[in-house]
Image (cartoon, rainbow, N blue to C red):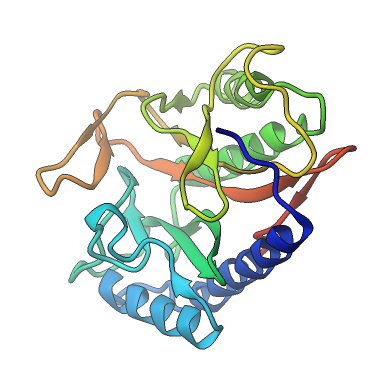
Length: 248
């Protein structure tokens, strides 16, 4: 069931989203060659707790980290560990925070040192695909409009659109109805209403759209080992458009 949030719930989600955005800004300066993903995870947890929230993803469905950290060909759900970042990597931090029972969720892909032109292009165009999807959001639009906008932009720029993974509704649970695919047909799906809160999150690959899951049962990687980028914002649907709750 898709829920319409009350003004009280929206206020809590704004606080949660602000904490998520602040956590991204805080971690960005630590994204340097030599740091381990576990160290980044610890820094994120410490910052979220000091901000008066709790990490949304810690133990969610049994996930062992505080945030998801995915590198290069890893699309999503990378587990923090001993791996050290290297110059030329790209890294996605997917961060969730829960404030007074309500969640914010945002992923962003970052460069580690000097990266290739291909990775720069992938990052730029995946971020732009996110905002293409957001641009169609307003009361009265259809959910399919979002996926259609993302997919159209991605295909125009010859990027693989991951279809096994989607955005989602969000509120008192991290994942609520509806699913928000990154592909679709304009004018289809549920009608958006003011007060809905959704997470829109294109996951686009430099090569094939095909993905598979590693033996850790969490990390999802590209089938051709080419890099993937992931950008996500939690947004509030309004009568005339949308409000980003997870501004960085």
